[in-house]
Image: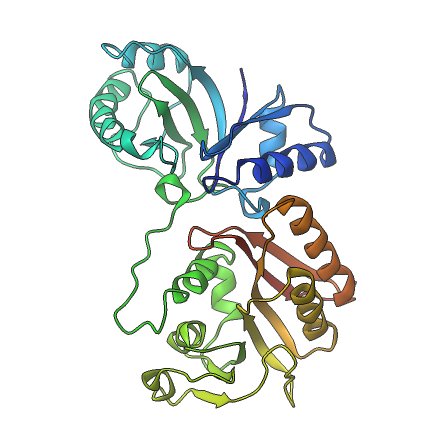
Length: 350
């Protein structure tokens, strides 16, 4: 059996399955998604796993935290010897640059963390003895992932380090700093880490650039922007935390963030307002169409039903109403809940 194994937020397996089925059809790959609610992962079964992995970059998948190519599924492992069948599945394979032993981020998967840790310690020397693992981590080589879904069932998978999440379980480990005005700051921190490459951040987010934060109170996203040394106009009828204002980089305007517009064009606009996703998509498109900003990060709060359909509809609506070429990336981040986060930047007209 070959295919792609993708992690997701528990409860969003149908959305990821729908996304993989539709995207596979768009790139001409035959296969089907195998998913069960609350598993925390989806398996896309296909004989063209290499082609699908190449045509669907990890950064372009919305509901996938991680993207792995399946080498083997081992559903009946003997707890007394799990290493031998894994070595057999890898026989003749080129060396890997690292080993991660993981489990889904789900209620059923989290109790497997102890097994994953101890098994990794046992498997590493066996892989090195077999010539399958480098002595030191090498991110220029593929990374081996052993994914336990229960104590006797594991997937042997591989990640392209250039096209996969660089964090175990696909989860960036971010710490909420004591002076963060709210936990929502973690969402923007993660968005900057996940949706924008380090090279892009150097170009797109330079000190002194000007930004607007719509619906800013109590100031979590504004605070993140000031830590990037941007000058921020924070729009909200509610108050901001005083230490955010004390940065000297923030102007607080008491206004309705959903209807406010800047007097002069800005570099950035960010928005985490609670509103119907289609209305948000239309308003964000207006900002780019009118040239009020060059780059934006915003959240779309998803309904309880048909979340993949709503996601696709809102992103299509946003792209159409912007009426200009855009690069758009969207992800359901670890710190998101019933929402996705979107990054868009205007590109040059051809």
